[in-house]
Image (cartoon, rainbow, N blue to C red; front, side):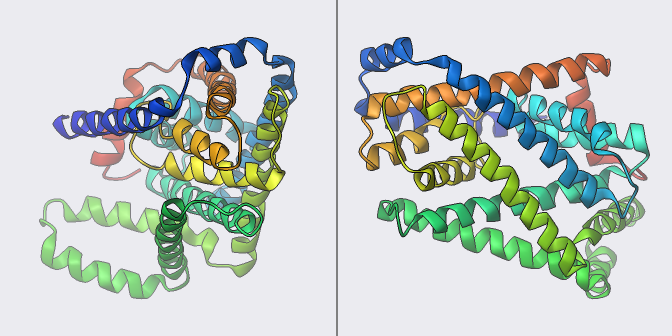
Length: 335
């Protein structure tokens, strides 16, 4: 429990640092004026497009789970929305855990296997964001410090991808390595439970064992994030500025990479500040950029949180279930 509070404190601190860095360049009365004059009707098609993207995301998860059990996209869609709801309002990204726990309850798929597919999602999302950034760079170059961050993130995500693919293609070698550590480093009492979680997690990686499946997962990831960039474009129409779609791809890539950092619930600061800085670098007034990014953040946060909250209530879940879900994963012996 103490570790959780330290994580929450770190997240709030990082959010506060991001906001502190952005405030000196903003004129809050100009931000408020831009918000008052925005044409918010443009948000409506953006929200529709966003939920289409969530459906595609649910279909991708169905595709990644099919080697474990065929679960329809229709059944997975509420779980994906609840996952976003949990991530938006609860610290520690507990939404990712609770959707796997709920999948276990509804479909009998092991939590550790389901979480493996969630990790794969995050890795391919990160690779897609980096692809967006690199595609945009020749046409929308960015400051050196951001470029260095992108290079570091590229190494991280590519390394993680190679490890996961290797684990899926050569499970025997990884199992041999894990077996040595299990025998020599794990307490005998805890070994059976941890071994079981490891094997079920490895089973969840099997969607990466086929080159065709890897291409399919990557292709659907690109579609998902292109759809989200279209939402960025729709929201931009509400404000008196224009940048190219490639710049919006760059904004989408950078802000979503930044949200992988610990932050306060709802990605406060880590989402907003990078977007403001990037748009400012391409000639958009900082206060106008802040109005746009804040509106975009709300348009991304509120609808899916409301829909996820509806499914949350419909499933008769409670706030304590988020903590219970994390405890279930941490202490599970056989999922």
